[in-house]
Image 1 (cartoon, helix red, strand yellow):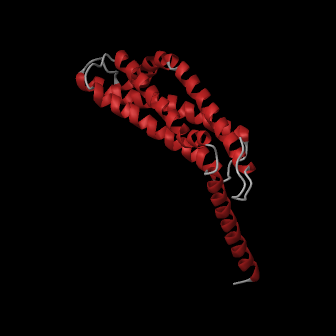
Image 2: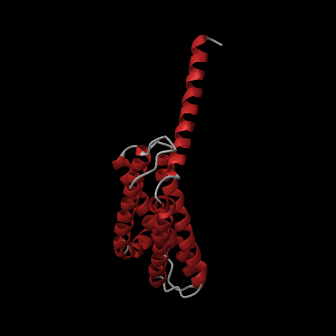
Image 3: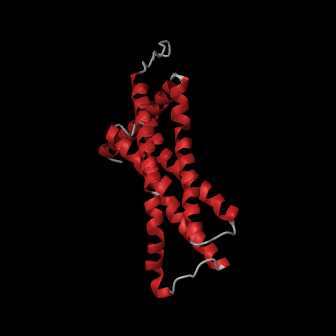
Length: 206
């Protein structure tokens, strides 16, 4: 192995070790935060995901009415609440929480954009896209509404979805605002973590 190869390998190992130490340092500092900050950082994504689940139920209700579906209420409601909840929580954790706690997200604007996108996509767009096939399947099964012919399917579903999407604009806006607010608070907590002195003997104030 050449000297350059050894240097690259050592440098890579050094960077990995430094990254691991930094993450460990952030985790230790996190435990010294006020309880209100720790709870907001830990459970904030759950609230955003809960709103996404509620959005799923709203979208499901709109499509059920549009397709005159009265059967399978529980069958359609359960996935429409659970899947957006799980998806939004996972997206926020992967794109905001974990990058902050690993020191990979140091841009406040990027953090806000990520939070807003997770709120809109996970709590608005995804429930709409999910509700359509769920209720279309029920409508076809129970013959509650006339189904489109093969050559007219796209136009039919677009015309059906257009007023529903318009009704969901408020939900999309609220989810985007909530995602932005939550990510801004999380970035503030991250900055507070960085300001905590490394010495365990010094207490956190404020």
